[in-house]
Structure formats: structure tokens, C-alpha cells
Length: 241
Image (cartoon, rainbow, N blue to C red; front, top):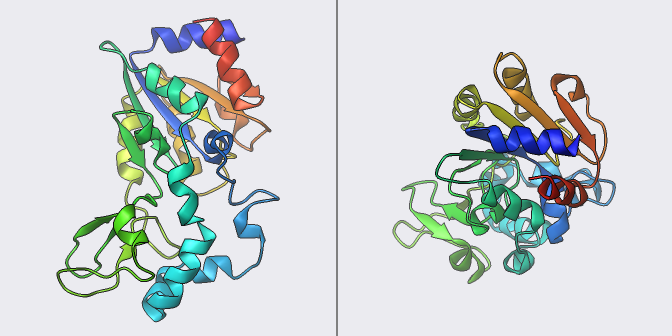
């Protein structure tokens, strides 16, 4: 199957790549919803990491936000084999667009040029009043970052609970133009992200490939399915390219 998957990837001209937490775990970033993930430590995490709580108590929000997302460690994480493989797929004759659930920014750090951060990013924050954007370095200089222009407490650009997802239409547009959909490292559990493979499945000329370390409820939507460690699977695919 690795040879067939490699052949399909090599022959594709427009590839849409969906990635989830499994792509980043090899870089040392925990899967927030796994048995050892941060969201399982208590049931209040979703409450605290919400837009409602941000506006209710922005000072305490930032204290908990930085602790939960281990912000001090974010700069230590580096792209891994999977990020590099996706970057290497880009050629003059092949367009590769990434739609990622991950908020760590590692796809961009790896050099991928077309990255849609479906759930936002930890690497930026914005003023909710004037919209001015600030870097991670700016945010980490103080306990509670505020806008230099208007004094409002900054809001992270990561998608909080209660925020509207604004990237879905753009994600659908990317998939509609793709002749190959490659999905990696996601359980396809979270809605509406998990609706995207159905769109490719309904397209007559789109090949669909799923690589994940365990089965998903969406396996039936794919032409080729590998239940395997991502790094191991990518290594075997590269050997056939």
C-alpha cells in the first residue's frame, strides 16, 4: 500500500492536507485530549479557556492560559519528520495546502507556504478593541499583556471555547480544488473539522488517504487507510517516492 500511496501523492497536482495533534506529538507537544493530555486533568479547563471567562476575568485567564498551554516551552518545539515531509511535497508543479487543527505554528516554522490554522495560533495575540496584533515574544514579556495603543487586555489568536470558527468556508474551498486529500494524525472527532473529509469523499476525482495511529469513525470515507505511527508511515512512503 505504501507504494500506491506514494504514487498517488507524486501524481497529484493539488494536495489538501488535514493535520491534527498526532502530527505534533513527535515534536514533544502533548495531545490535549489524549489520556495524558492537558484537558483531562480537570473539567474546568474548557470553562477557563473560554471567551466568556476571558472577558469575565482577563487577568486570571492569562495566568491559566500560559500554564495550560505551557507557553514558556513553546519556543523549544521544533518541526519533525512529518512537518518536513509535507513541506517537501511543495514543488513548482504541485500546490500543497495545509488545514491544521494544531495551534503550535510548526507547519509555518517548517517552511510550508500555504497554512490555514483552523483553530488559530498560540504565536499571536490581538487587541479585541483596535485589532492590533502582537507576537508571542510580546505576550511573554509581561504577566498580562495589554495593547500599547488603547490599553485593552490582549486576547489570544487561538480559538477559545465560545469563539466562532471562521476558517471553515476557506477550508472547504481548498478541498474542493484538491485532487488528493491527505489526512494525518487526527481522530476526526471534533466538529466541524471532521466534516471536511466528507466533502472530498463526495468529489469524483479526489483521492483520499488517512494515516492515523488508531481507527476513526470516518475511515470509510478514505480510499487508503493506514493505522500506524505517523513517523514510521511517512518514512515508508518516502522510501517509495
